[in-house]
Image (cartoon, rainbow, N blue to C red; front, side, top):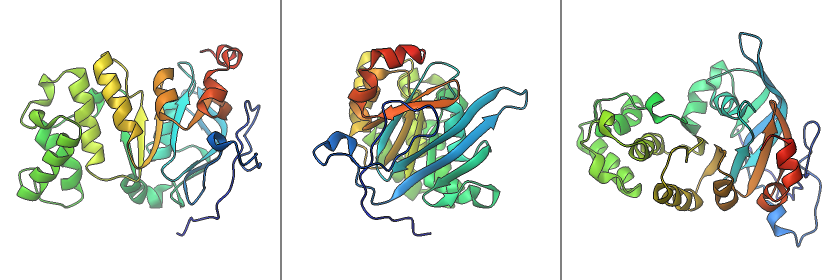
Length: 274
């Protein structure tokens, strides 16, 4: 499906009581609040989700993300941030509309959606399951038919290249059970990036990292040339990496805007539980 649109200017309100409007024009000189919408990577309209026990996790959330835009979703514990990522990836199904690169997230499209999105969980132990780093990173390629096993020459070279990009090539023959948290995060990220997803979804990517590892990840994500949506409690990371901030609380989208517009608004953050 061709999802391309004409370039548009977008205004993000400082706060929203319901679904925000993303199409109001703004002064041309306000470059920080303007995105050239050559294509829409993610479209969410009226999205809601309730867990089987009756707990409401997401309530009437609407937003769009442009191709190669970097967005940080912030909010207190229980705001619905992680659930939202699972809904974008098709691991959960809610009420409302979710489109990934023009494809509606539904049963018939789930395979195509998984090819376009890569989700890195908050806890890498939920993601790493193969005995060695080589096997784990190679798994996504083998699943897509590139080599019958992780030991084929083509697959091994691709794994080496991806690990080298993440400064983790020395881990290739290590056991996934003998890694530090920072090393596990790199391996989990490598296992997703090796499949070349158009849209990268990260759940609390700096949680538990030491300062040096955090700085490295910030710089890496800043230079990443693909659509990025991440949930985080790390407001410094959000400020440095994201061009747009989405603030959630109680399962609702409370506000969205540029980093300064949201993160410098102490009253708004405190009222939202941050």
